[in-house]
Length: 237
Image (tube, rainbow, N blue to C red; front, side, top):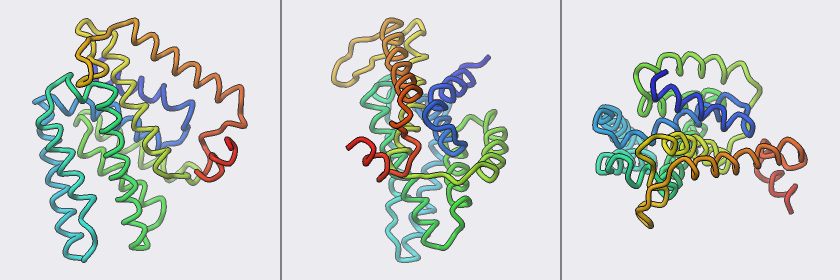
């Protein structure tokens, strides 16, 4: 199995116990794939992302709407273009920042579509497809579009907000780091704060933390991430 397929499968495994929903699983795939945009052979994806951002910014400006979502895409593409492979992007601070930016774009783009009275399911569908076109490997894109097309329209309505979107993207990205920790070269988990490379022991530690969270959400059903945000905080406090 090729490397990117392993990353995709592992991301789905890690996110499914928390978000068994096609939309959030699609975000996990995006998270697992975006980490490797810092490699030179993925510059095509960055060019597509920058072009999409530019077109979106121009259209929004013409409609007298804030061009922020488009500008954010251009910024993300430029950031990855300058990034060194297995540097900052392949670190916990890096995936936190990347997941945050992508979550802001996803939520902003969905909200923008909804202001034009576009159907709720169509809005999240378009968001998933556009992010897939910009980020995913071409060998995976057709299958991704097919599964997302079927899944989003056949599954129950999704609750989405920034916390859920960010979590799905972050766990997907973190799953990529975990697999890389088991490779021979290791990962600078805290770059640029600390340049030390970590390996299998750190990978096992992160997997253990993930397993603990999975157990908590299975044995304590009253703590349920899969709720509207206000209900989620009410159940805690």
